Amino acid sequence: MKKILFITVISGFLPQFELNDVRTLKEMGCEIHYASNFKNPVYAFDKDVLTDLGIVLHQIDIEKNPANLSNYRAIGQVRRLIDSCDIDAISCHNPMGGVVGRLAARLSKRDPYVIYTAHGFHFYEGAPALNWILYYNAERYLARYTDELITINEEDYKRALNFKLKEGGHVDKIHGVGVDDIKFVPNKEVGTEIRKELGISDSAFVMLTAAELRDNKNHMVVFRAIKKIMVDLRLGDGQLYYLLCGKGPNQPELEKYVKDNGLEKIVKFLGFRTDMANMLQTADCFVFPSIREGLGVAAVEALLCGVPLVVADNRGTKEYAVDGVNSFVCDANSSSDFKRSIIRLIKDKEQKQYMAEHCRESAQVFTVHEVQKTMKKVYEEWISH
Image (tube, rainbow, N blue to C red; front, side):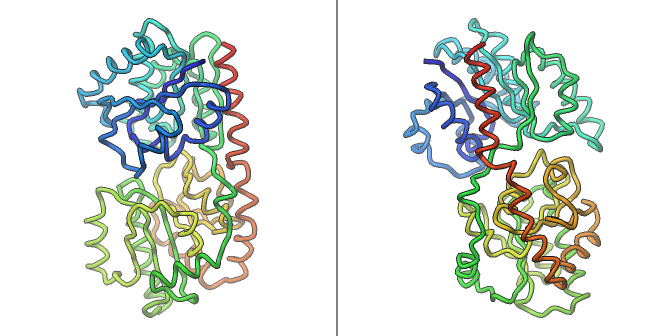
């Protein structure tokens, strides 16, 4: 039986994003191990779900911050895991998962097959110079220890093709981690029920987002747009809502802005949700203002639910957002752009309906069935290696 070890910084990453790969590997008869820092979940999950799937769990002291000395200890921990558990392949995720995993594989006695999935390089067009100095050079160097480098957007794919991988190594592009198009479907009856629970009328215009509350997610640009919309359209209480599904370090700052600017009746902080397939049914549009995205699974989920997008223009949203067809694409720094786009959806019912009708079709290449076709080929390449 072939053994594969998944490595992530965030312990909730595998149950949140990689269970489709786990199922594919189990169907291929593989034994699956998972090494992560289980003190750093971020995404809520139940360990029992993983153990019930037969996944062997391993605690390692890996941290997101590259400067954290715990990562040196994590390299040794993963190296020992590879050797003691007879690991045949590793699948690395998150930047430091890629660093720790690939260096540990290099130092191990077994020389396992190395798969690294880049869920969005930290160096990209318009990124700070420091990102290029640190992350670009690190990724270029570590590519020599990589058998399979997987990217999730076209910009990263083209850049990765210039890296020198291990002899016989491959670079592939997948359309994200794969979204369940049976789970994420339009269901307005569910949306009506949730609106009632939240005290929102059927006639109100509801914007929704699902993202961590941190700088890169750029929520403040939407708050500023909402302030302008309320003035321009002279909206009263109960006519406009912005639902934020997520948590993060910026929440106190964002809540203060909302309070100071009289937006408490409009903006609702709902915390991390495990029922996004239902929450999306409440939305008239999905707002996604991130400065940087590798892809943006949450936006793809919205498309599959028939919800038009209002997004910032970045390499991730370029993969699926077609301006005027399923989305309005905005400058990430322009609250005026977001204001105009949202107002158009509020006022132009025909445009909103047209976009909603094109959402689901435009997201089909991102479904789990399509993504797993590619991932199965990747795993078959490893097994036959």
